[in-house]
Length: 297
Ligand SMILES: Nc1nc2c(ncn2[C@@H]2O[C@H](COP(=O)(O)OP(=O)(O)OP(=O)(O)O)[C@@H](O)[C@H]2O)c(=O)[nH]1
Ligand SMILES: [Mg+2]
Image (cartoon, rainbow, N blue to C red):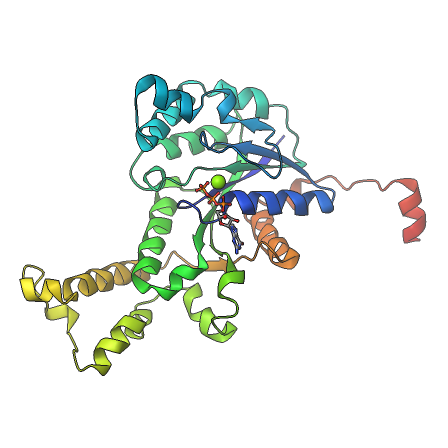
């Protein structure tokens, strides 16, 4: 029997838990079953109580107090502890049927997605055929307002790409909090940000202002060791161009839009998740209760 899941990831405060909550509400409204797994050992408040909470295994607060670690070191310790106690997950998830969408709400420390090998191990454990065998997809969130600052947008896209390469599961990249940019930018203008490419750097508002002031810099000929170039921000621009080129040449990152305040938007993302993990193909046709059969006739 297959199981189905989505791992909601992304930097701090991008709206992961809010998205999980909207998704659960939406699933409930559509009479679908969700199993909510909180894997953030620091999370305290939830719109929907988790069905499984890492804090029942280990809490960040206790780790920080007892081992005298800071919040980031403490989080790494919690995940290493989880890795040594994976039966905490398998015991709870083993009996779930294919009807459930298992939603993993992850912490926001970016290190988890970039250079610590804990998540690939966790994902392998969850997806391993013959064991839990969860058909899992990753939903990586970035804030839509990042598009205003191109350096942030490309840095975020690089972190999304890094997570994609590291985890090797179907992956959706999502620009969250669309309600915050909806009024600032026309739909047509925003469309350009759905697939990162280097031309976006050309009309970076900061760059346009510099060009207007007559300070045009050829980023390809800047020497990063040149102090004047460094102080004028030219090295930074060269770095951004290199990052943008890298992302464009890999051609792996594209974005969906999410507005958690809009039911249709949540449904659209859910459809992408369902397609990624082929959820519908495994569902048995359900019999409707009698009164609904009568209504439909
Ligand atoms: N306007 C708006 N605010 C949002 C949205 N989603 C989340 N927020 C706000 O953003 C803040 C962070 O949201 P969370 O859902 O806790 O973000 P998170 O990614 O789970 O945060 P961490 O787990 O701490 O990394 C909260 O104040 C939310 O109310 C959204 O779609 N629109
Ligand atoms: Mg959260």
